[in-house]
Image (spheres, rainbow, N blue to C red):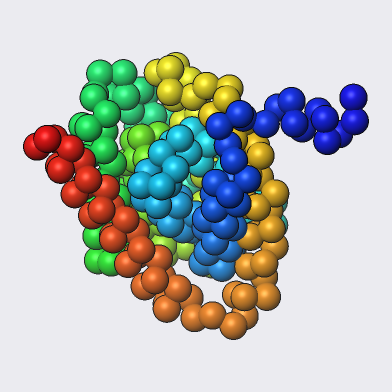
Length: 256
């Protein structure tokens, strides 16, 4: 069997070329944002995906987050703050375990509302820019919030980004990359335990990986041309609008 035939045998029957290209464009944009600003993949992709491609939330997006975070981690591996990362991962595990229970017993409409509120909370925390020091307590608490948000919505970056924001740039990027990589693996395991991460869903994430790699690669030249502050404003605006749209959609269906 040649490569084309093998790929065709794996391709999901309900994933048309146009829909795949649209998903890929979204993933490309999110990976590019992450490469430029250090975070943003899930905050950009998750609200759009829930509205347009709900099959991507949260499993496939988390599956894409793993190699994306790995790329960021490997780029500055020696700068990782291992102590901070360890406390954050312990917290992330606790948050993921709580999310497993939530996913088992909450209805789809409840999850949609919770999704929107968690994204809006993440945006609010990012805008407020709380000044905190990366102590064991703050790192663990942020890891817990990240695990809860990340497992349910795939967007768990804001709490950790705020808790670690006072680290120097290289340790910040490297430590976040490591925590997001290991944390995504933990969240995927929690989703599997909750019956929310099937092989077919994760296959879609694998098929979108080339778009993620291309977006991360494109971020290098763009990072020298775009303002990080301006990019942050665009990202938070898109996340807010997407979350509000998801919330309005959930409330509309609840009334009808």
